Figure (tube, rainbow, N blue to C red):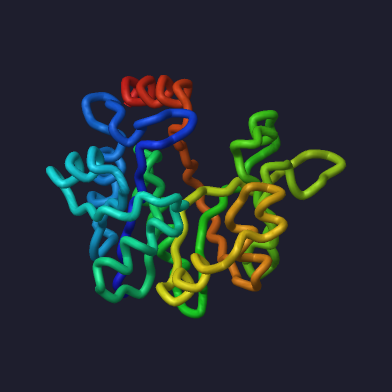
Length: 238
């Protein structure tokens, strides 16, 4: 099975501008992500997709990179544009977040293990005991059915439980087959998506299935200055 990994990255983060090029322990964030993915040896090709010349010039020194449009794009649309430009065929396309420098090979393996036809979209979840941290809006929660397909994503704590016990936290890595990716980038925003500001709900509202794999490995994205401080502390520990 041929799998391509595409890492969307842009400079215009509202909470941490320019974060792909921020130095973390002697390497930029985007270089750490790229090296983690390429060292996994799980992909036929890995490329960074960016609209910014600064990122393009930087990544071009150590890896493959494609310039995408500078018009407003979300990560999914940027991934599709990059895939369309390379004009090569793959069985699955994996969207790897450009702000997760500590992504693990085992996470990627867990996702790839469920990349089987007829699965349309695949992602990961992690079971978590209740804690106040799970109440944070930045942590996406998921409800699944007995076929390990997502029913709903929310920033709120779901499902409702009288006695709060275990929940599923979303790990934001996605895989799509090329035909499905082409379809979902053309969908207009949906009502649930607009309510929650979560693109996945657009896909569910339009009848697409999202297969979920359960992983034991957590995810850590760098979105704020506080996240950056924690990342640097983790590097010192390791």
